[in-house]
Image (cartoon, rainbow, N blue to C red; front, side, top):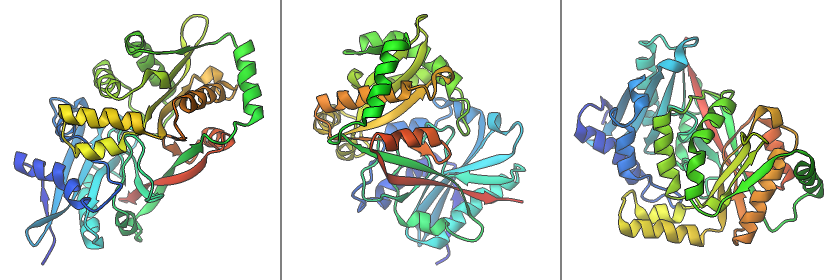
Length: 372
């Protein structure tokens, strides 16, 4: 039977689109499902401001009247003032090169009508959305908010008209190993001479006053990241509410200067994969218990971000914050740290992970389709 590609237009089709990964990944032991209500919010223009700043399209693939794939196309207007690029996102399909290519072609044809010169992905509205396809390390549980897709999907993208745009690396730091003495000496010098104060937290209440300073700090210091989109106050409220559900204040460290301005921060969360798997996409009191239990039982700390003000980069502050995080993780009985995804060109951050004893265990790949 021929593969039929259908644009998502009705609520019923949207529901099929959102729930398809649950069906496709039912035998995938490392698949960590998202919350279904969060996925509905993501695709609701009244709840996702970025939908109103973009042109988007969603497609479903059917074969023998069965849904066998999905994909989303994004044309983000604020990012296209100087270059015309589109993105594909949420690519999920059966083990079929034909299905994968037809879905990608559908987005490419749509993007051509927008005068786009390239489609790249998987990549959402911002770097805060799951990025890339897991091409290496398929046996490892994903870190928080990282995709774990079927291993055959990347293989289907390695065709003549699809190129590699960039890779993202995730490092595992085994905490049983001793920290390098040279990094400890650097951290000691930072503590002694930098005039910076590193704040530590025991409860969520004292964190609340830092929400707006953190937003401003990230906007000022992440603007060099690939395809960065500034965080609005409304979006920060949503991000804050989501992360406060799962964050342990002990794993947040904020360095401030003498004027109480943020100089750097590190944020991590115990790996919640086992709890999220038991939730199976549903929010409930019982599933809150599953998440709480997973946080207590976790042996891995997922690094969400480590960001340093431009003025203090490569001066030892990033090492100091990471060593404090390692110490906190050991104190709480955790065995390893799983880093956030690091762009292949970010040599200084990757080198820090290596100096901390980290080895890359996962690689996520972002692909590009030229439309010239």
